[in-house]
Image (tube, rainbow, N blue to C red):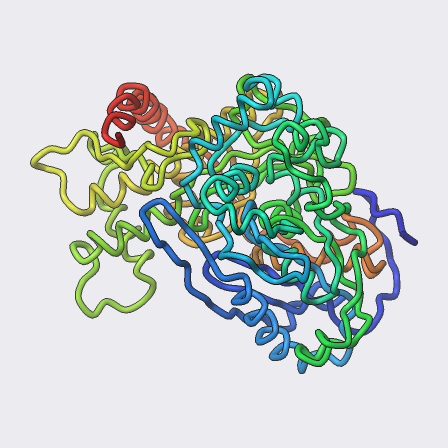
Length: 517
């Protein structure tokens, strides 16, 4: 690269005319945005597509829907800029796209939220030589959402498909293939396959051998700011992008989202509350808690790492409340965002929900329990508990679940005193104040929060030399809007509530498992 993309540095440079394109291949839709070299948002488009659930606990998508959405979104955006300087890619992690030797899709992609692979996780751990050995190889335990167990599931249940596999790609990398004609990925997204040596930033040959998977199936992994190819003539015809436009490696959605939030240096942290919830912290060394309670991945910062914890149903739990119980607190014909109405009604109930505690394990849980059989629970119901109590308990329960990850990260010696919020959980001040008290950390909202697509566009700017460094990109593109300090009285209430919350899962774990059998 012409410009070493270090962390620091404020540079006063003349930036080129044009725009940077960020593309985020999400679970419910694809988002594309244009970012000017001086950090201004020039336009944003989202194209939606369905999620298929053929059986309970399964989640699939047709990869061709991602490409069609990408073509449609980019075609709408390129009219807004006469010159696209570079394209950065991001998207949902862990999904598996199975291609034959002609790069044709063999079967629907199994997604990050698919829970069918518990038996394959056990098989991977055994083949690796045990849980400790697997952590040594990949820095992560075997979890149902990861890519590797999906591949073994296909081998066991779809042998006809397995016999035709020539490449396995992650969701955003399928879009990359269609844009550039090249098979490539980045080190952050590859870290979430459970087939990657996170310490050495390369595919784990010993684990691939133990699992009987050929190395040729997996594309070369690049740093997040490196160029992986150029837009082909065919992709240019379909999208309107100029042929030859550089396409940057990018990163998985959480890694790219951290760039977009300005979390680039060790000790900086963010909390993202979308459908799932993620607590993310940058670190300078690949550190892991005993037993692998956190994800430990390469980051989109060149040569860096990050640790993170994942709550599978964060904003998803609040959406569940809206869809099933929300009519009880949302007045008929009420205007405005229904989540704001829910938060307003929840605020009428005292902190602690008068003893009602909610476990948000509606689709199992990842951090810290790694338990696909866990389920949602309301504890402490009484005759006094009404819909507003349940609403507040859901908000508090999600915050408690996020705190589990905060505490694990603190246990690694990474101090978390300030957290940048993103996603739906950053939109309502009531929930922000609650999170600050639960986490025991000041929480900060950004002036502009465009999610992983913003980070992908910033990585495109770093990779093409528009920004001279990661620090330069953050200085230009990221700014704080407001902050919420810890309320001491609220903090004391939530310390007591968190202790009750923490006691519930160990008591219910055997019941969860027995109920699933």
